Structure formats: structure tokens, C-alpha cells
Image 1 (cartoon, rainbow, N blue to C red):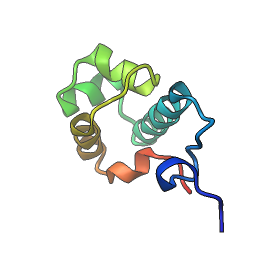
Image 2 (cartoon, one colour; image 1 turned 60 degrees about the horizontal axis):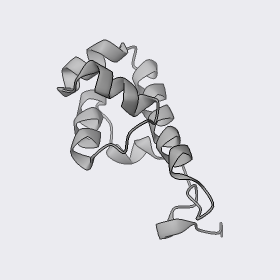
Image 3 (cartoon, rainbow, N blue to C red; image 1 turned 120 degrees about the vertical axis):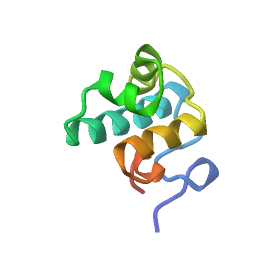
Length: 87
């Protein structure tokens, strides 16, 4: 069984800094968006999020709220859990 990190998340360890964690989530969101053929500008519009704010989410520059993660998941027609790296 894999060793679990902070809060039982195997991909997030106590030694992983906050920036790395935010970048990992942002990278997953970007990959899902690109796989669906949606531009960043269109994704932001469909999710009801400011374009520049959305870009900062994908670049891992901000600690995005659960509300925005849910909006993005709805826009991408996926489960919010898909934004987190697999166990």
C-alpha cells in the first residue's frame, strides 16, 4: 500500500511546498481543458470566471476556492476529483 502524505493524499507530502501543490492542480485543469479542445478564454467565460483569474488558476499562482473548482468541473463536464493527481 502506498505511503500517504498530508491528509491522506499520496501525491501531497508534508515536504511538498504549497506552490508545487497548486501547480499540480493547475496543470491537471489545463490538461483536461486542452483535451476537450477548449481555449482558456472560452473556459473562463463558460465557468463565469474572469479570464486573468482563470489563467492564474491554471498556472498554480492562487489557492482557488472550492466554488471555482466546482464551476470549472461543471464547465469541463468532469468530477472535481479529476483535478487532483492520481493516487
